[in-house]
Structure formats: structure tokens, C-alpha cells
Figure 1: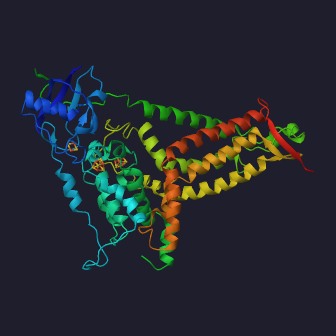
Figure 2: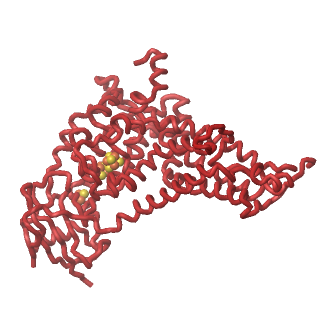
Length: 248
Length: 271
Ligand code: SF4
Ligand code: SF4
Ligand code: FES
């Protein structure tokens, strides 16, 4: 039997805003994005929201549903309590453009600063060959759909507003995929420590908790990177070994 | 159908689920352990059956059991305010530093005690635009976790020696419930220690190419095994923590004569 629910949606822009309640009739399997579409179609076409695939693969529909960062297309309405209005807000960490649409361009700006895959023999026409055991570890990071839910949730960016010192978990995953790449010859350790700010992360694992692709961001990406930075900058024994071995 | 609520300012959305249950549970669990461990470390008594239960030991009624809090066994001669300093206080620094810098426990206490943040998308306590996390000293000491891991391995070896001794009775070899308690202790601690992120890095995580040579392939195999434990690191962190306290409580209770150390079997010196 169709049930009617209330959605409390943020309406506004960079200058501020308010919330607006909408009553929506549910249907089986309805997700929050469906409800937003029903509102756009039947009640208010001016309600702004970004989406593309409705299959949890484009990473566009990130929002905060009842205060929890989620993909709207992956959040079923019947999994939420309906005795109270369902709150739908834009991502908190990024500036609002309109209603549920935020400006996430900062993420692309910092991504540009990361040195891409660097091969020993850049000009070679030989196809790149990788063994499965080398692919396994970095493949996980390739699942990222750039929804930026992790960037939004990380308290360093969200609460402490340190976009100036920390690139955020999404970029850590990208850095990990490059650093652990068997054919990559670049060394991004100094960049990680001094520019991307891996040391700012205090391993609270909220990025992992919200990742819709279930990437083990902290355990498989950030912590291994921290250990690599420790190798170079914090481990006196390794420093000594490098010195004895005549390496830098 | 639409109604507008709220004022012109930016409204806040708050998590409506019971996000506080996990940090609260962790805080209570850790506080209980800290309270018990502190009490025991200062007690400086009832940790060795051969010493505190001398008559039962000499009549072959208990195994040679040592509390993990007081292992390795050594005598401290120092006195502060006329009271002998407990060896447990000196020993505790090593497992404590391992757990304190453990990547799992960091998550646990940064959330539960420092509320930075208490839970995901819940506002942190003392938000600060000067946040630097673990970038600089003193917080950068967290980067030395690997050294606490090396000590943890030495402690495990020492605990293996305790297990060996726990098969020992004054009049022969055998097993008691206490022997099982210390065996389980060393097993759970091993599952925790060898799932350490620093260990994972050391055995193979630091390599970029696993297929490049035979040694790297071997290290890949080891890395896979450590990864298996690492994925369960939080679980083993907790079980081993609880069990080490249980093992101590068992030895204490036996030494205090509260419970007998039930002997499962025994073979005399002659066979
Ligand atoms: S683990 Fe690190 S990157 Fe991930 S949310 Fe926590 S502080 Fe941010
Ligand atoms: S790592 Fe996960 S949460 Fe972060 S942007 Fe990629 S898919 Fe989204
Ligand atoms: S619409 Fe593509 S991820 Fe939600």
C-alpha cells in the first residue's frame, strides 16, 4: 500500500537558505533520489539536484540524508524512519550552488597537483604488462566514483576547514594507487608529507564508513601511505641504514 | 502541498540515528580496562603461583602461572614513599605504547575520548582551523608505531616462555585450566600483534612490485596472511585486551585462594 512520507529539503544558495517540507507518495523500492524526482515533476521543478546514473556509479547525487552523507540513489526510503520528516541537505563541506547542488571543484583543483603515472620509459610503444598479484592491491582504489562523500565527511575538511593542509581521503586513494603501482617510478613521499598532508589524518575511518564503493580508504590507502612516509622521515633506523648504504 | 519552515539562516541537519552508542561503548570498555589494569599494576601482589601460593605449589596442586601484567618476571628494588615500585608499572609501558599508537586504537580513542570527531558527520569537539593531526611533534610520535611493534614481538616470545612454564608443576608436567588460560592469551595476542599495520607494511606493504622476483613473491604471500589478520584487527585488539585482563584475574584469583587451578592431567617426573 502506498505510504505518504514527508521530505524536509534544504532550499537556498551560498547566501543562506531554509528548509521546505514536501509530502510524497512512496512506491516499492523508492530511493531518496526518486522522491526528489517526484517533487521536481509534480510539485516544484525549481528544486535543484545533481544526478546522472541512478545506479550508484556516477557519484553525482551525494547529499546528507538525516544528517548522514550518502548517495541519494542508493538510500532506500523504506530503510529510513518515516514517523519524522526525512531531511535532505547538501554536502556540508562544499559551498552550496543551489538547493542540493554543491560546488565540488576544489577536489579537481587539488587532484591536478598530483603527479600522474610516471613510467621509466615514457616513449616506449611496448604495451604495459602487469601481473594479477600487482593489480590486486591498486584495483580496489580504481573503484572510486568520485562522489566526494569521503571528502565531505572527513572532519579535517568538514569541521576544521583545513583544505589548505590536507587533500582529503579521495586524493589519498589516488596517491596510493600511483605510489603502489608497479610500473610507476615517481616518488611522492615528500609530496605526501609536505603538500598533500597525509599526517593531518588521525585515522578516524569516517571516510571508509561512508564510501559507497566500500573502498578500505584508511586501512588500505592512508595507513600504508603513512607507513611509507614514516620509512623516509620518522624511522631513525631506516635513516641510519640509508646513510650506511650511501642512499639518500 | 509544500510548507516552508525555518528562518533565513542556514539550517543544520543532524544525524538522527543512535551514533553515540559506539563511542560510548568504547569509552566505557576502555575505562574499565584502564581502571582494572591500574589497580593491578599498583597492587604489586598475587601474580605468581609459585610465590604467592607456595604451599599449594609445593604440594603439586597448581601449575607455574604468572600474570601477563607481571611478565617478564623481575624484581625492582626501588622504593617510593617507602613502598616498593611494582614491576608491572615498568612492564606496562611497552604493551601500553603499542596499543596507544595502534592504528585501530587511535581511531577508537580519537573518537571516544577526544571527540575528534565522536562519530562520522557529527561535529568534532574544539573545531580548529589550526588542526594539524599527527603532522608535528609531539603527535608525530604516532609515526613510531613500528618500534612498539618490535617490542610487542619480544613480549610475545616472552609470553611463549610463560606458556612453556605453565605446563610445569613441582612434581612433573601437565595441564591445568590456568595453562589453557595462558595459551589462549598468547594466541589472541599473536592474532592481534601480527595483524598490525606496521607489520603489514614491513612484510610486504612497502613493495610496489610483487611479481618482480622470488623474494617479492614470498613477501606477497606473507603480506596476504598479515592482511587477513589486519582486516580483523579491531576484533583481535578487543578480544586480546579483554582476555589479558581475564588471564590476570584468573592468576590473581588462584593466588588469592578464591578459585582452585583445576588440573586437567599430570605426568610425574618419572613418566
Ligand atoms: S580516516 Fe583520516 S581521511 Fe578518513 S575521515 Fe578520518 S581523518 Fe579524514
Ligand atoms: S573513495 Fe569512496 S567515498 Fe571517496 S570519492 Fe571515491 S567512491 Fe566516493
Ligand atoms: S545518480 Fe549516479 S551515483 Fe547517484
